[in-house]
Length: 113
Figure 1 (cartoon, rainbow, N blue to C red):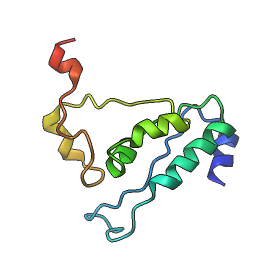
Figure 2 (cartoon, rainbow, N blue to C red):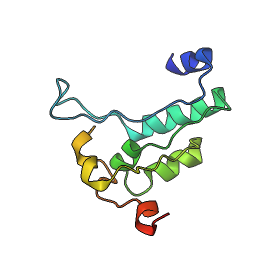
Figure 3 (spheres, one colour):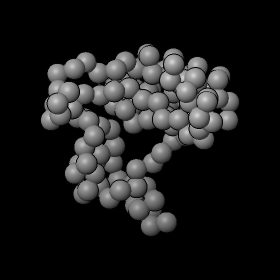
């Protein structure tokens, strides 16, 4: 149903990522979404909405660190969104636990460009 709604709305960007439960919310204790289902939704969304921008999310990389974002790109995602927030501020808006890239330095800042 959601994919058909994406098409009906003629969206330019469709963010598809797995739900990751956060212990400090009313939904604490619920199961996370699955990487496999997210991959299926990305692939089908790409078929149905050929021109949409579909990000390979950090949530996928968090649940599948070895290749979550890379696999999403192989299945139809076509956007990688770098985190350019200074490292000292990233942990202040934790959307879900163990999010990847929280401690990584932005290479554009490291190289001064």
